[in-house]
Image (cartoon, rainbow, N blue to C red; front, top):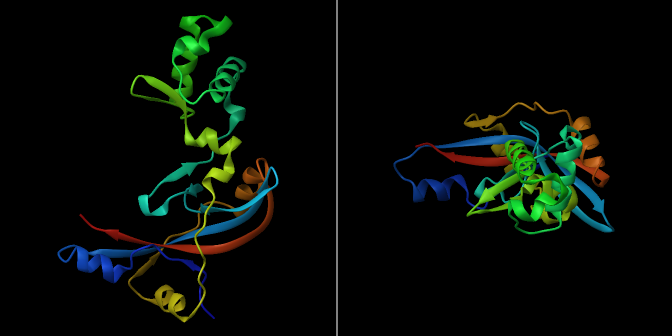
Length: 196
């Protein structure tokens, strides 16, 4: 029986050909693939279990941190709610009855918390916040393989297995606050690192 493994787009051999002078390290990152339902849409979410990030666009190493909205005070919640209604915005569009100075302080706090980002003179909500309202946009379409090849890779002495640091039950609870979790599959994400 093999080891449940998600492969990257490029193999270690292909990366060695493209980078003949560099060393390639192979890591196995513990993960779970969650089968979830959100607003009658069924999809998969891939969560790595080292730091607890949602793996979105793994080839670009694009990860999304799960955040907790319970950390918001009332004014931050009001401003964030207004921000969610717009794609991009400036401070004037958010101020409303809070006033410009107070709104600026609140937006600065939300930026520090990673909930709002500032790009090219405009603000927008972060992917971390967007995930809470639109988790289907971060669906994983990666396939888990489980065969002799995955077993060979897992048992190779050059493959480094990272330790699981995040509790699956905690992930299930956090995602369960957003989506209905139907199934959880343990797996590993194969990651090839090119040393500089």
